[in-house]
Length: 434
Image (cartoon, rainbow, N blue to C red):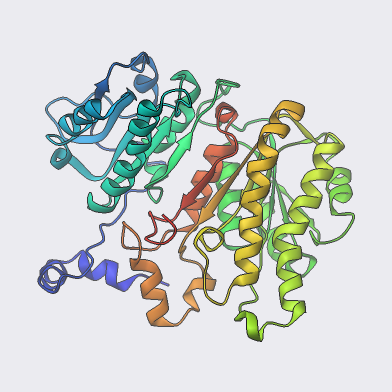
């Protein structure tokens, strides 16, 4: 359903009226398209503290060009060298003069260092960057985003910086992303980084799953469109359009993992756990079967199939697992104790499994946590609840399925091997759940 309020505020009368009434004034976001693959403007590289990072080669490959006399599309502040409270003043000094020059739908990326357990002054200063970043994201406005990346190796963060400094990250703001040591750092074809790789997307016949399948196919993957047998016709339609294959399968079946392995004898490189259901009702009115079916689809089937595909080697080394969580699992939501429990469980799985899957199988495990995304499901939500969902984030609007898909594609990228165990909210920096 179209966001009429967003369109209204884009008109002169709408801007005047909403400003006078103190109402939210969302800005139309610049999203990726083949015609507009990069942000329009230059990149400004600033430093606070004494940094040991050599960022220049990475930034030359990842973001807009250097900021000259034209407008600034993105600012990267290297604050990895900030080690005490006094050095935090350099963060203010660096960003204070330039924020007004950042274009609408621009990007601010702050680079921080991991917290040093042996130096509580450094840990305090670096943790301060998190509160700073999230606060700035809530005040910067005009469709601009602010994120924090903790890293020790600039090269390992290349795919992350490329994503955050591009239109693909339009609905990702207020996030803290940790990047580990470099693993795989290149793709044979930068324009089609998933070429030669096989990706399976569950729940891909419609909605967010369909958008994820489309985006992975755009990036070169051979996509397997998995959905329940009742949606087989839609799944085959999507697969045919993308040049992939359809796999009708109920993920709650005990042998789902074995059947996926049988359908993919040559193995799998990218596993996207997107399938999910809701059966909303307050706990006092929720029968056991409504609880059980949500936990089975959204969590138990994810655990079973992941275990099976890792154990039998179907997921090849260098592979990627991306699961779909939700801000409902992070912040809670009335009437969704079953759904919130299932999505919080996905987060727990990611954080526990990620280090072991990487060490034992060479596979990364991450999650995306969507907020209010414009789908047929949210279009059916009552008007006032829908409007509240749209406006209660720093960008004051709902996201699109493409926003979740682009974030998933970044985590699935061959060069994202240093991103592991992360839960990235795609929620426009929801005002709920930090």
